[in-house]
Image (tube, each protein chain N blue to C red):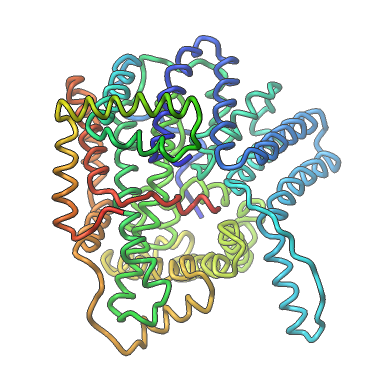
Length: 471
Length: 93
């Protein structure tokens, strides 16, 4: 069930009043929300709901076990058991064939051919996100940052809650569980923000991301050698905006929908292409993943506590694994490692945090370099294979046809509108929300109606799935 | 790697609205969309396997569509869509 569809509108129109009707009976509300979340997940695959339940139950019991153990070797062993179990499930479904293929190729290159069997297994949707939610819970319980909940329903809801289940944002257990112990306040709904996030998300996904993908980006990435260098440059920019509008649309709608049901999620994007450095980009792009990687990988690896070389190593490991999290492909690993290398370089040039280096060059130049580096790395992220990525970059730099473009006027307009999402100052959005909240009810209804109507008028025929669904 | 704190969810800056206003906005918007783009629901329902609930729902959706047609509520959508397609050179899938 995709957000911008009729089935989701009907689903939400039923879930919304029932959730609030159950608001005074918190446990019943949680069971209800869990049931509808499993229904939401079951829309893609009914039998993977068992995986969702098994993961939640397993992590619930493991957290209770951790609570009973004294600090020491046994407790650490139980934590590692939990981490290994979660990663084993993720590895089996998502990475098994990738590792087998990589091992076969490696042994072949070493002159030691081996035979290993591949498995035919469907990838459960959202498995990466639910694994990260589960891991954050047991690691925080181990670190005694949160007390484990003794109520199974809290964990079932935390891991399966439908707004964040499929593609985030990644909500920390502590931030979510503290919202499950009390009822929501029906007099305190951030309606302006919700409407803004939901209709803005629909516009970004249905209009900007879809037209950029279907009318331009898909073509130039399919056979880059058939396009001019200008087209490939524009294709790179277009993909940067497409993936931003696609992914941020999903999390914006997720945040808005959750808020309408009385739950708050953290912000996930903050105009990432305004970044003046790669480090700045990661403070603005998929912020909940960045902070997850920082807290559960980079810092446990030692962070910046072990000297320069150890810090650089930890950054590279974190970014490499962060890349691999996106999918079983060397392209994602290369993408992550390139970002890691840029973060290391920024530290080398600018000291701790790269702040000094940032001040050494004019802001416009810093933005230009950062933006183009980020766009270039997206080529590895988008291209279906390493060969295709190299072909894209080779044609971009050395292709025969320099000028001339196949970009249609519609795509050009969409590209400009997409770029505006990065330029418009935050305070304008705040002003619009504040104005909306003060407006009469008639205007409150008219605004979402007009925007959704306009989106429907200009929408392409079908709505493809969100890019981050595959992760 | 220093990042803003995404662990703690900040309270939104807003003027709080009541559940009643929120419900009015949600359902009035959906109702207006149902009238303004009335072919959407029947088209969606036609994609399901024929069954008793499907045919009942389809019948109801078709009634809404013919009502919207009669009062001219879907005129704006068809006109706007035609202008959009003419301007962009795109075709209906």
